Length: 596
Image (tube, rainbow, N blue to C red; front, top):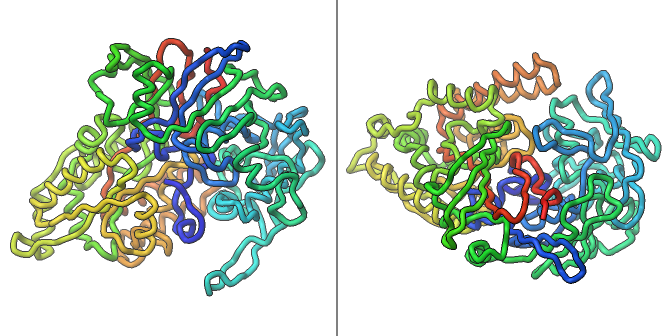
């Protein structure tokens, strides 16, 4: 779920601009279904080109929130101090050679790799990093300032009081970010408090360095180019590809950067054609004008999947087919670390109704009938891959403790809850479910029909409305929706990044704060326990894990959500290319290792 600026940022929606995550067109949770189609070609000059279809492209600035296509471009143009290895989630050096951490766990000192070049020919220095992170915090163009200014991972800084929309607010004071260039090759950054997953955040895409002074959107810099030129025409980073030509509405050509600090990229060029229509991208796939693609969920047939291998991070690899062209292709799927669910506004929907609807449904049916078996039924807010103890512990805790029926519907209990609250065939409850009309509409329509059928049998008349994602967010923030579709993809691999929403606080869209209960108090106390144990020690980790479970069970008790599913990403490719397997939703979606 994309973070947006202004009022929406205040409610704390999860972001995905720094890492590839579930956004429209990239996962099974989108009927666009196609985050990238590729085909290899060799032009008359002998250039190996990888052709990629993307649904959109607009702004490539690291501090901007991006749609799916823009993120693909940014992933290739920019790189971070650290990156995730293909076989794990522990960040490894990328633009650094080494780092150290102070005894109090707050100050990180990074030694920059020598000889790293930007695409404009300048060499990366510590001053570039300081400038880039100050832009992230202070630029009027930044939509990701909260990445380093709020929350558990927070660079030390000072604030000042300003009047915003008639209210006094604490805002960042420019120039006070605790990031220092010790010398040309050494960066020192100090956190407000120790944080167990700080390295993962230092690998976040929004912290990618750009040349010092390239744009003049913070104090002390006039800028070497206009912002619109940098952000949408000539982005300059240290990644494996530079932007050769950009036509936002048509095609973008990325060229392998000769001065790249890492291994030489496979394709000489990546040509990204902007193709908004999912059916058009599908036709390109079955016509074999592309080699790598993703099927819209409406075209996917789970009976045609054959899994031959499961890898360490849960990736499944095998084959799919035949397609309508008669070809069988390679297939892979991976965990997206994402939870899709239906939110109740607790100030509008009574607790007995919320509980009854949870009893009435079977999440396994959501996966099978809504998403054709691609994904896992959701019983917790935390995705299985980052649940304390992993997927086995996730399944065990849900099977033993989920109160509403594990892989089953409990209609009798649902009716009893409603009857105890005074409802019957002659006194029915009415509420409205609002669905995406621009994100996997067919799948959500099937799920909504399932919920409506079950609701009718438990004295609930469910009306269904449809709206774009942006409208749902706006209406939810304003408190105008009873029940609606939403989801969150994790920005770092911890239950904390999901459960920060599972507590009563002013910006919580469920408005649990307006429905105080013993469960909401327990959730608030458990979250405080998490915040008091953010250090890297085993004892702190154990305290967090115990608090996470208490939060999950408090959420169950008050039924503030109707959980849906945990999606998985999918990719299909012909035998003409050798495509690395996507490790997880946390990893950048890169094509530099493709062999043509």
